[in-house]
Structures are given as structure tokens and as C-alpha cells.
Image 1: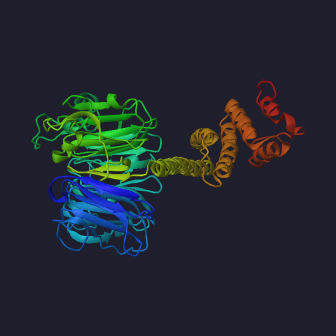
Image 2: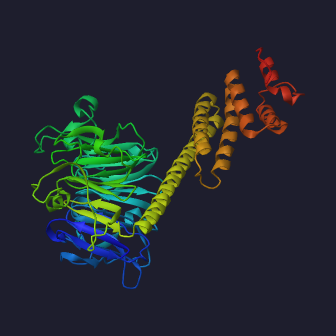
Image 3: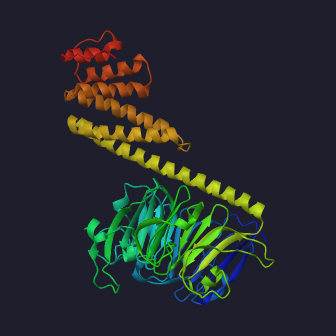
Length: 555
């Protein structure tokens, strides 16, 4: 045996199911819904395919019918020759993304959670035509809403918005049946997204977490919402033990760490820091926060019992949580019905919530240790991808983590740089239009924004080994043209010191040589701003200041 998927759950999934995976399997994705599981496997023809099992009342298995199954059944898709890069399962619906960025949805269609334009259920995958032309890289499912991240770091949402879980602000509708881009995060590069029951969290490319939706039990991590976030509005129709607030737009979660991964459960959330530190917040009544207490947390707090472990992934279920370490160890805590039998340290220990992380001893039929590679949680479900060969596992897992980490860093840096360059070009175009209209002061402000962004990206390029092809030349060309325009605008509005600084920066970026200086002179002469003949290009800045009766040391 090379790899297996171990599944523990109640209901239709049984208490303990084992699914063997061929060693030829290139990549295994797992997604747990409320009572169903979806994963990628090789079919009998050794082609990548989707398989699902569990409850199928609304067609969430995608098998073309509503027959529930405890055995994996092949999902009916129209992309037999394509691989899948992202899977997500909600309470009664499922999403899948192919390597070409095409998104499919199936299951319960109520509230528009499938994004197909009509609230009709579908028993097999349907293409999201509204996202045609948008390359999606990741999807997430809440109970009745869906989220997606495109290749440019844009965030999309559809489905129920009654509690603001789409992050679209006040749209005057309780649900949206087609995907809409989250404009409030358009200027932020989103790297990952997760959805809980009625709340959502997103991770930016800079390691910042945002949250929105229903702040049930503090799952938004917003602290005292009534005090700190006056824009939250109460929803008196909710039957909760305390007045909760609804936030319909993304709000930053204050975590003193750069975050690398996120997860969302029913009413709790988790985040993994770049150095392997785990943070949890939200509902803790069943011990799902791992704090040792059955108490809610309204702000993120580190899980102290795992402070000496390097956590690589966290997964949140309805009332339980799991964490994977870089050594292939699996820790679980909280309450998940019969799943809690796994964590008992003694056979006579009463069954109940586990308040602190406990290592789950994974073993095969021969009592040989198994090592966890991936983990996923659903309603009361725990699914783990394991490997029995320690050396093979360590090597493969290390290579997979290294590759995934490098790919993540590369995508994160590329997304950020491309977005910043696009913003530079937008401000540059606006500045050019203003300068053409002889609005030099306004144009100078736009140019200064371009320069500020350019300097920030230049620092990022200096410390990052990942950069899209040609990005440095592109930024350099934008900065040179912008600084030239800024120099002229500042000179025109008599800000000579600013003009000198712009010219100096221009020369630093362009390199030494008289050609660059002469280009500035020619631009000045063309605009008839300089009425004297420049005989010595070396002293151009000195002579410019002398014309205006200023005295500075020549550069």
C-alpha cells in the first residue's frame, strides 16, 4: 500500500472507511461536506477523475441521481481528460475547479449557491457560464454561499447574502444567483479563501486575514464588535444566546503574525502562521479551539499546546478541528460524535469533548504507523490522506511541501507584483491625461503615487527570488517615463526642489551618462520652459536652479 484515505464520521459515511490510492495518483484532493466527501482518484483507465460518497439527498455527490452511498462513486463530469486543482463541499452542494480554471457546481441550488442564475438543484456538475473567461484557482463552500479566487487575486461570491457572508456590502438582496466580484477587496490580492456556516475569511498575498458575515460566537475575530465596529448591524431574528452582529464587508483580523493558511468551521476559524504557529477563534463550547476551556474567543489566540510543533495545515469541522505537522503527525480536538473514540487515551474514558489537541495514532491493519499527508474536516467528518512508508512519506511529503510552498510563494509574489504594476500603469495614464490638460499639480500627485508604488515593488524584487518574466524591465520603463513627467510637472508649478529630487532619482534608476540628462533638457526645451542655452549638460541641475535665483550645491 502506498497511500490511503482514512475517513471517520457518523451517518452515511460510516464510522471508519479506508480507501486505497494507487501510487500512480499524481495528486489527491479531499473535501468534506456536512455528510459527504469528494476526492480525486484515478479511474479504471488510469485517468484523473472525481469520486464522491455519503449523503446525496440533493445530488451533492454529482452522480446524476439522489442515491446516497457509503462507497465512492464516480462523479459525472464533462472534463474527463482534465485534472482538478480545487474542491469544496458545503452542507448540500459541491464545487470543483479544473487545471484550466473552469468551475463546476452541483447539488442544492437554493439561494443561488450554485451560481447558475436559477435556484434549481442539479444532480451532476454544471459549468458556471458566468465565470467564463475568468480563470479560477480556488473555491470554498459555506452552508448556503460560495466563494472563489481567480488567478489575478480577485475574489468572487454568490449565494446567500442575508448575513453579509459574500462581503459585497449592502446590495439590497438576501441572495445573489450569479457570481459577483467583491469590489471591497479589489485593491487587495487574495491568495486563499475559506467559508464557514454564515461567515467567510480570506487570506491576502501579504499574509493578512480578512473576515465578514455573521459574527456568531466571535468567529470573525473582530473582538468587541459593538465597540470597535459600529458599522455592524444587529439581526434580532437570530435565535442565539447573545446579540450577534452582522458585517457585510471585509474587515481585517488582527493577528501579530504573517499567515500562510486559513480554515473556517461552523462558528469557528483557524489560521496557520508562516512559521508554523496555529491560531483559533470563535465558538469554543465543544473544545474546538484547543484552548483547554469550553469558552468562546472573540480574537485570535495561539494554541499553546502546539507551540512547539510546526503546523502546516489546519482543518475546521462543525465542532472539531484537526492540525497537521511537518513531521506527518495529526492532532485533533473538539467534538465530532463517534470520531472522539479515536482520541480516548483509555478505553474506559468517557466519551465527550476533547478540550486540548491530542495526537491521533494512525496505524494500518498490521499495526504499522501511518503518516499524515493531508487532512480535511466536514460536519462531523475527519478525512486523512496517509502513507505507510516513512522514508517514502518523508521524502514525498517534504518534496510536496517544498513544491507547494515554493509555488505558493511564487504565485503570491507574482500576483502582488502584477497587481502593483497594473496600479502603476493606471495612475500613470491618469497623470498623462492630466498633464495633457495642463493640470500639472494634479498630474504630479498621480506621478508621485506611481513612484511610491514603484519603490515598494523595487524593494520586493530585491528580496524575492520569484518574479514574473520581464517584470523588472516593465517597472523600470514605467518609472523612467513617470519620473520624467513628474520632473516637468514640478518644474512647471515652480516646485524646483521637488524637480531636482525627481531628476536625481531618474538618473539613479536610469544609470549614469549624459544621454539621460540631455533627454530631460530636450523635454524642457520642447515645452519652452527653459529660455537659455545649456552648454554644459553636466551642470544641468545647477543651471536650472540658477535661472530661478536659487543656490544649491551642484550634483
